[in-house]
Image (tube, rainbow, N blue to C red):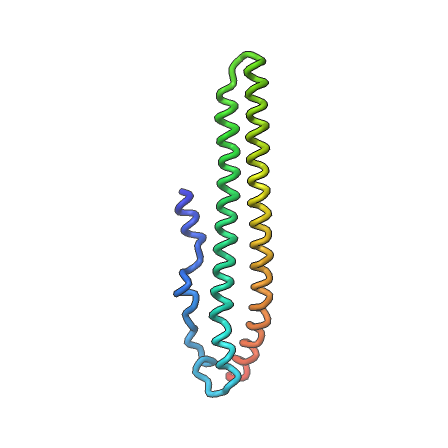
Length: 140
């Protein structure tokens, strides 16, 4: 099930993402449209790479939380009726919870940084898309 979810979230392969759109701007004889089409390919690859990093980080966070809850379930199922065993189990649960929370927090920070990096990439593409839109309206 996780493999299906992960594969459905993956963006197209870099070969597919770098294919140029056969739009009229590509075949235009004006010199202004040609440099804009060559700039889009590296940006698209960078955005795809950033999106893949965000997806990997999100999957890692989900795995951390799944590990946390599995650890809690296993630890709590091993509890016996004596208070000494309960205290030992509680100590293990707290220790595992602390480790898992730290790991999840670390992966969450990595995810946030990936999102910020993707946001910066998208800002660069926004100005490029406006330029392409203006160029396309001049052609039509």
